[in-house]
Image 1 (cartoon, one colour):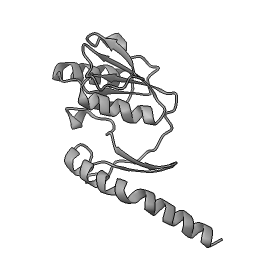
Image 2: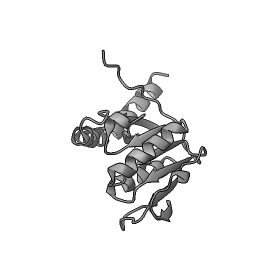
Image 3: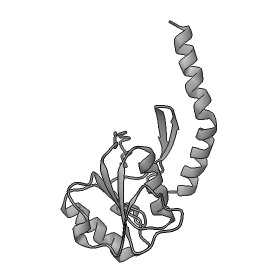
Image 4: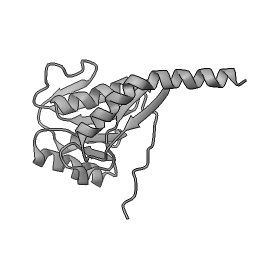
Length: 160
């Protein structure tokens, strides 16, 4: 029997998170984390131009000592399988949850697509099966989520 993922929503404001990688996937993950108030550090020998400015960037190859117990979780989103595997193994040895962008079987958690209206959130995730499906569903929800939230708020106010 395959169990569903447990959808944990957690306050990451001011929590430190490490991303290994400086490309497009790492930038998208950093952007989402920053929107949620996290303190993000990224390690990579290069960063794309659109990488969020608010991230503390360390411009060099990843080394094992980059992973420290201070991190809430770690994300490996480099374009190098060996580096991602090293990040995985190091995080696991320190009992730090890790997400590996190129290998869903090595993930402790999956990065959801976050849909937000003020402080009311919903997320979509396919557990690494299909980022295209996740994106399509998220795009549809983004279009209707604010009106659903406002409608329900209005309904609650009318019933009191």
